[in-house]
Image 1 (cartoon, rainbow, N blue to C red):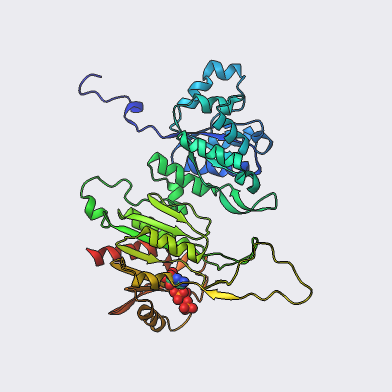
Image 2: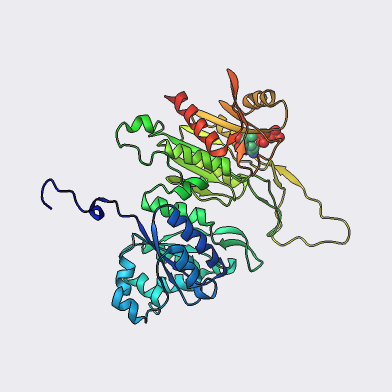
Length: 432
Ligand code: CTP
């Protein structure tokens, strides 16, 4: 190009990231429509490949309309081969996403089988590949599927963990397709971009996106600090099918983990059973019970700051039945409980006690008074007292008071991500 001349517009415009979306067969395929909408909304482009079984659940017409691109369904299309061969189709993308990825597709990938358009271009691609599995719980837990997942991960494929919950087939457990917002958050993280759609959903938000690279410490005040966070409920099993639980959604703890990571911290998030995507840049350890949570907390030490947001079950079943407890006539089986360890109080007494230890408290009345008492009883530095008289548990907003040894401050009701950002700002100020 001659000096002094502007490049044609197409050369200096930043090319949007391009996703090749492979849609496998399964009832979860309908969620791919919403994923396409979120990809488009984030400014990326998307082209779809629909497998033969995927076409039983969504139509090429829907996908073409939403993606505003041709939909590819067969290896044997002369028109496609003339215009764009399957090799090129697999390579023009910045990321290949398989959503939903069925047990069959994963097995073929792990075995290097290429017998249709989707599997052929997966074998031909030199682009990063992310698989979002969705299948029946037994299929997911089957040794063959787990073996295939391990093989795919060893081959460098990124495999998202499926969600746990009630499934279309009537069973319950892991295997559900994660919500499209969570899949989008993962795509944005891999593309290193902040997507509008993800920001709207509050997942994977990175307020540093677009900031200049200079003065990192001013923008990342927790750089070099290890922040340990517990979040969500714990489940305390009674027998193989029943457990004691509470209504905690984990949203506040996950928002705090995201805000701490955005502030530059190394974050370990110890999560009870929740249906939330891991925030970008956060190391997540999944646990089920209070005892597992306590062990994970101790294993994660040392930490500079610990924020115990989890709604840990106060009690667990005294003994856990190995078999499902059967109904015996009219009288219900007595349930004997035993107290769980207080993870927060234990951490306060631990030889490796974090320098700043923060607890949460759920209160419905005399909030500051009860929080002050809890501060002393637990031996922590701050208590974030939630007013749970409304719909805080599982809701989008939170009303909190920050109680310290020297006083308390009341914050107005705020969305949980905003409470998280303010708390992280206050912590950053405290330790600076
Ligand atoms: N906590 C803990 N381990 C427990 C119980 C609670 O680490 N076994 C932590 C929670 O993560 C939270 C704080 O302690 O940071 C809450 O303390 P808790 O005594 O459970 O307070 P409330 O939930 O407010 O319950 P209550 O008022 O009934 O004492």
